[in-house]
Amino acid sequence: MIGGRLLDSFVRSQTQDTRRFGRSVRQHTLDLVRHPVRTAVQTAVMTGLFLFLFVLVTNPEGMATLAAGGPIGVGDVLAVLPNPFVLAALVVGLVVLVLAATVSADVSNDMRYR
Image (cartoon, rainbow, N blue to C red; front, side, top):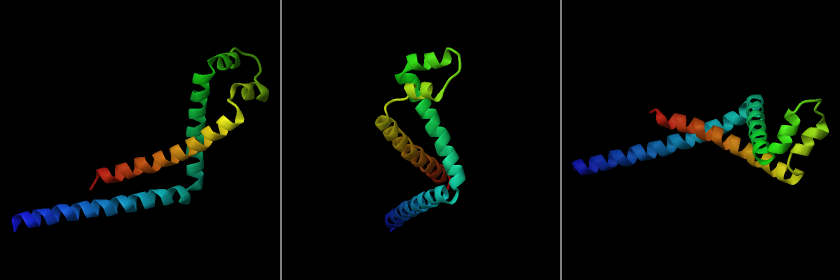
């Protein structure tokens, strides 16, 4: 009898946590859609930062040339970037990663507190 009540309590709390998790994921995913300016700015900043770091690591000579001084033109910046297919794949992957990380962090924060 006591074991049955303990088991029932445990199962009920697990079911409530699952429902709470689902509601949290749904809420934070919709928040990305409801606040398009915030989402676009956040995604653009993080994608730009990751791309800068990627170019810095993969092409340090090109970055050193840009940093050496003198006027920097569009052609100079384009010469440092990887080819367009790799760049497009990186941008798409980073956008998905940033949005998923945003939802994941918010859900994790919600699940931490009861």
